[in-house]
Image (cartoon, rainbow, N blue to C red; front, side, top):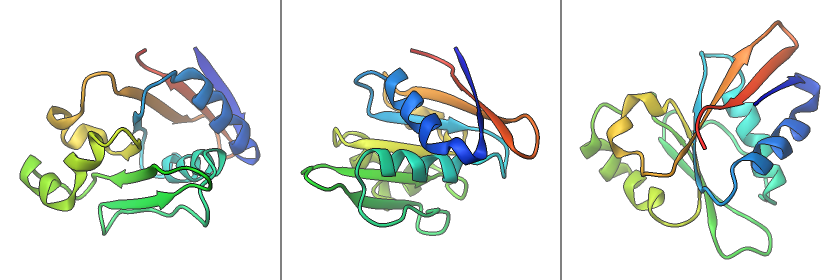
Length: 139
């Protein structure tokens, strides 16, 4: 199923996506640079009750966010700069992936071998300057 949305309707897109993933906690975001992965993830974090603003973890690789009233964290990862599973391990990625918390991953294609079974893959594509499509690639 594909969901077409305007950039001004990111909260609705985030809500739709959360409704599609079921009990999955690892969500992999595929899309070109500038497609809106980080912005969509920030809206998902808002929907999950994250306090503060979610931002791109390009340089630190992983951000951990706490959610109001929840004992679990939400991990936002950007694997663009990762080159090996060893690097991912040193950055804390493996621990986060198996923590049971939400893990929202940008550029998962860099290290597909470390993605746990049951992860959901999502594509975000640019339609035009103001519109995007979301598609769950597997369930």
